[in-house]
Length: 261
Image (cartoon, rainbow, N blue to C red; front, top):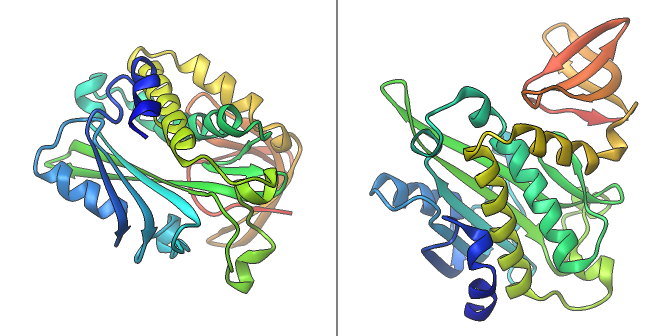
């Protein structure tokens, strides 16, 4: 592990300068948030092989069986890194999705793609997910915890997940190299975070669009106050919002659950 991390030191930048490794953790996001509250430096990473209370977006539980995945949370302080620019903060999740997909491609050769806003897929099955959680005080952003989970090995997934998820082992038919995958993830996040800090937003948006070819003209649906709404996706705008054509008008979705039909 140490050799792999050293190999990508220059690419990592501030990411992974300090790393906490656990065989089992409740939630790596919770551990990272507690460290951030105590003033740990930006880029500190918390890694676990198993979570007992992992979670995804919208408060869902994240299935984290022993030995089957890799769970990583990184402390970021974007306001101090690039002056609190609103667009840069808005693109953090988009940049993270790009980084994870790029890392999977580099480490495994798999044709990983992105599903808006931040799921990483192989084919139509989910391989990894990303959850960003921010902490603010007095209206000022204090820190962001960037959490991700990636499925490495085949596992006995719950019935409701079995047909919708995959793993690196299942897709490559060989055991995954944990050290290589983790180092490539940290390096790719470091590179894309550097893009944010330098306001190279077009590079991030361009990469996201290239890594989401299935988005073009996809039929999507989401729940609105008046009921379900359906339309055709037309990509993302320069703030990372999903563009959907609905009955001749263009909707911009900032967040929420989108179902792909």
